[in-house]
Length: 194
Image (cartoon, rainbow, N blue to C red):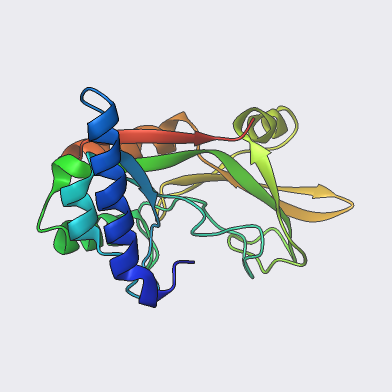
């Protein structure tokens, strides 16, 4: 978590880094990873977009291993903090520099021990990250569920106790790719485990 008192220093660092790259390379492409939510106003998205060729938004971990409830790693709607919130926030704070915004999407999920098979069940312990292939391997024995609100897939199953695995599949990702196109973003990026 970037402290808010480092906001100006991050901009200065990226300015100096950009100068160094341009001095030593022909036409470098400079991008940086940025958070989905700026919890303490530490990121000057506008200045960073001006300095770099792109801001790679880490559009995942809205629900993470330590979440109190199981839920989508990268929700497209259905929650206050979701991809729609994130993109609108970036567009507002960058004065609509959508050509500089890259939406990073997850090729992984989380699997939590949960209280029951109800959607967004309370978690009983930390979740574990699941690669895409290990998440879909659960479909051999268990049924896939679709959450229209968050445009996400999830599986409820029993392995001694109830568990929920939330992940992005080809359908949820295609909706998110279309969202990036409809938002006129520079493109999408992929974060994959493994």
